[in-house]
Amino acid sequence: MCKSPFHAFLKALPKCEHHIHLEGALTPSLLFSLAKRNSISLPTDDPSFASPEALIERYQRFTSLDDFLQYYYIGFSVLLHSSDFEALAWDYFQHASDGGVHHAEVFFDPQAHTSRGVSYTTVLSGFQAACSRAERELGITTELITCYLRHLPVSDALAMFDHAEVQESYRNGSIRGIGMDSSELDFPPELFQELFDKAREQGLRLTTHAGEEGPADYIATALNNLGVERIDHGIHLADDEELMKQVVARGTLLTICPMSNVVLRCVKEVKYVPIRKFLNAGVKFSINSDDPAYFGGYILDNYCAVHDAFDLSIAEWESIARASIEGSWCGDERKQEMLAALAQHVETWERK
Ligand SMILES: Nc1ncnc2[nH]cnc12
Ligand SMILES: [Zn+2]
Figure 1: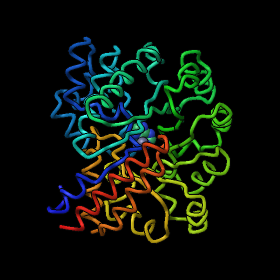
Figure 2 (figure 1 turned 90 degrees about the horizontal axis):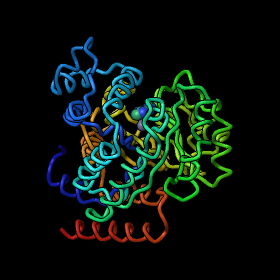
Figure 3 (figure 1 turned 120 degrees about the vertical axis):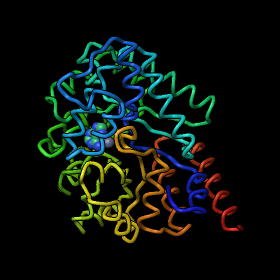
Figure 4 (figure 1 turned 180 degrees about the vertical axis):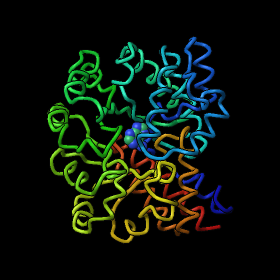
């Protein structure tokens, strides 16, 4: 937790979260309780699955994105029923609300559920129930984003995209857009050109993970070829000054996840996430939790970690919060509400 009194300022700062994998909100304690309830046996050849505590300990020793992803996908095995997905997302929304989130745009990975025999409708109905409850009881507005898995064949992504239940959710507005995630280095964005072309033709919003472990070139391809409007992570943009200028000119939003970057060893410490460089250059970004149950913190922990590392001013925090509101995929009316809440929060704080 960052030093008070700034903690109170950051907690009440109106936030939008754009980069959270709902499956990455599966805490070890929920994982174990769902495994028991659904009679799922966890791996017996890995001592990390001996107890929730052992798993938490293992999560502190990830060596890379792929090392994390093997645990992330094992976690999926305990999610079977619509109520499991609802419980998972509801747990996340409660934490998000505690951390001052007003609006959340959340990812999920359909292919990793349907490949286990869990239908898309089961997954979506559970997540939708939690989204409705979050809106009703917490006042959090939400958007759902289906992510496609880069480590699987392109044909698998296209089949998922064309699936009748998925198409229906795109047509009826249940899903706002698509993203792409999973292993990065061996899977450059251009492999998935056809998927993004089809999604754009259907009027879906587009984003992708790029420049997390992969080079700045992947960010350029994602922007110029796939035509995405946001970049998830994008920290390697800092390696390419020319591309950075283009990103500034276009107003592209990066969805940065500082604690994730440290835990997955993309950077040594939060102070090496190029926050200061991006602020100085005028690159817009939001700050997000990515997989909070695996990386030791929800959105507010990430805001606090950034504050501890960079000692940002109120004006800098205001500009980060404004960029995150303006870069959201909700309607203009909702954006105006959040901008008004932000202005009021800053004014109240400045009067203190
Ligand atoms: N940080 C991350 N990068 C790529 N794919 C992911 N899936 C869940 N978290 C991810
Ligand atoms: Zn991510």
